[in-house]
Picture (spheres, helix red, strand yellow):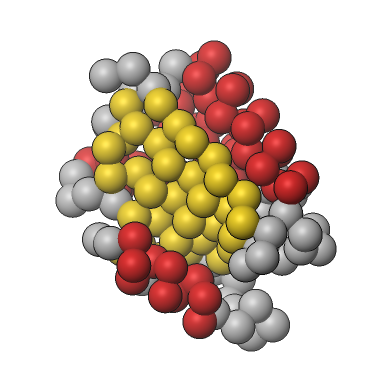
Length: 133
C-alpha cells in the first residue's frame, strides 16, 4: 500500500498529531520528516515541550531501513517530543515502532481517545525520559 501521512499541529494544546499509513520508501520518509518540521514550527510550545500523538493503525510492516529512518527522526533533537503516544494495531508493525521509539517517553494504545487522555494527563515536569508501557 502506498505511503500516506497527515500532520496536524494544535497550538492550543501543544500537540502534534501524526497519522501514517502504508509502506514508506526513503522519499516518503523524507517528505514525512519535512512535514513534521513544518508542524512543529506551527506549535507555540518551547522546543521539545510538545506532545505527539502518532496514529499508525494503518501502517504496513516496514523495511529495516525504514525503521532505522523512523528511529532517526524520533531521535532528532529538533523533533523530540516530551512524550509520544502511539496508537497501534496488534501486528509486527507495532513491534517495529517500539524498537524505533526505544529511549523516548512513549506509550502504546489501541484507541485515539486513550492516547489523548494519557498525553493530556502527563505532567511534563515529572515525565520519565524512557519508554514505558
